[in-house]
Length: 273
Image (cartoon, rainbow, N blue to C red; front, top):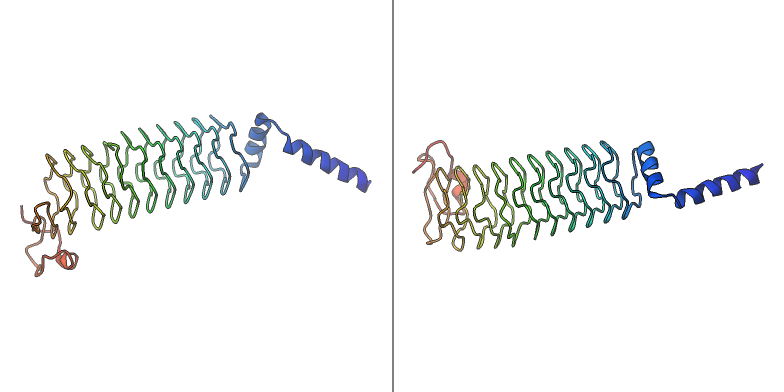
């Protein structure tokens, strides 16, 4: 009897290893999780995987076109070169996920967590990243053209050498972000937070920076030609001509306008125009 049971289990195991793509889908839908599972090149398009646990899963080059991954756990997942076009990833956990060269165009990443994620050379064109957490994310070479990052958190994110035109970055948090040599020409940065960001040689030509906070920044080598600068907080900012701006500084409590001391004293209650 024991021999028969052993042979039966071995047969089941071998059949599991040689299942077709449709069987993979079936097992996935039944189990509702594939922690650390190998799904490279899997065809999972248009499936309903909402809330699934796919932590540490290998989904390299998988097809997840129009797949519902809302609230799914994809922490540390390998999504390199994965097709996620028009995918639903609202409130998904993509912390430290590898999305190198992934195609996320037209995807919904609203309120998703992408903290520390690798999005180098990823395509996020026309995607929705409203209120998403992209802190410490790597976005070098990523495409954000026509994407919506309203209210997104990009604190300490690396967008250096970024050359696309993200047209809508309303209220985006770019504090401590690396925007060195980035091309943000024509970008919509209304009410954006840019304190302590690296803006060396950043191109803001024709950008709308109305109400943005650039207090204490060094803009010596940045470009702001034809940019909308209405209500911008430039308190303690070193402008392109080397002068320190007082625009946005409070009348009260400021004794030292140098960049090293502005944060201790500035407020936005009363300001110079």
